[in-house]
Image (tube, rainbow, N blue to C red):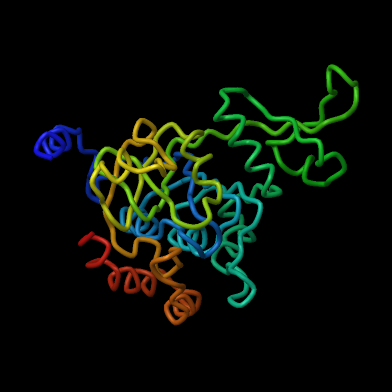
Length: 281
């Protein structure tokens, strides 16, 4: 028992503050956001990026909602590569994102969700592109610089190549992580494991920091292993007001209030209400 505690004490801790983690994300970075639509989005980090006035971020997400909407509203974004950006049907469209794209402030690179996945897979495999058979006849091919029609060298049939997307940083919210960076996700994994393999750096925000024995002494190993992770931030309710499987559901009242915000002064007041809980961890 004492030996186990001693070994855990010697583990190199990767735990940092939310402010420190956000400072690792630089203006102009390609930023991968974990979660899916209104579920397990890394909202505490999103709020901190707006507070730190980040600029020209290039967002990557298969299906986004409030996270992408807020970063666009805060003026943090230059482009978005995604298959779907909208709140789920009950909450309607992502109005701030839509206005930013329509106003020419943000470039929306429209994908199918699986072409984002293909682009991330290419990055995780260390290759420059991934062939996609299903996308042969589509206006998206000409509209998106990440797509190109090529000839299969073996069959001579047409195939679409999707350029690799390698995020500079991926931010993933999880239910449990240890200080070394091993992470466990409860419920759907979405594309978060893939993000952890494709990105240059990985930041975890986590509901709970657990002992390393929760992974080494369990048959259920880490979904994201420590050697892929650069920093761990403990922030309780770090996905709120979105949901986090097994922990809390969507805060509908808060969500609707955010969608009704009209200007940056309103956004700053909204962020202040989360400041204490975000920083407390």
